[in-house]
Length: 137
Image (cartoon, rainbow, N blue to C red; front, side):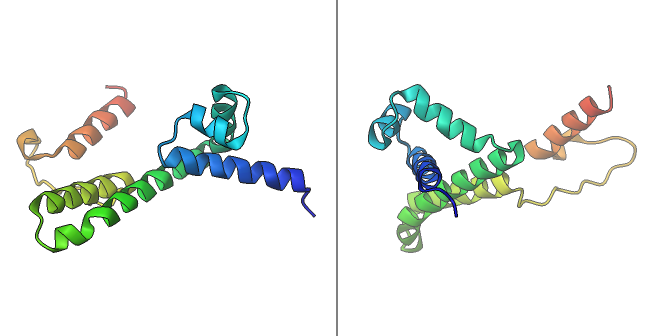
């Protein structure tokens, strides 16, 4: 059986992460959840998210995905009713989600010996730069 104190501590950190996701400042989180200082709340959240570096990245990606979902839900009905500004915002959120989760397939560009960089998008150019850094050039 898990001790009550451990469960309560985990629940407090989960609530802190939830509040941070909602945009609360560390001072507000500390005051609401009973930490003595902003630094204590920050340290608790950071420790929870960095328990495993891979988990931390996935957790932040998940949090950002949830934020995007919340924003899209708030304006989606307006977009469907023809609000062009809302449609633009939804499109932007969808593009952000695709970048965040790597949903876009890379663009294939055929070439004969050299690459026409004018035909490449930002993601492809970044990939070329990263690949050249990794190869020691």
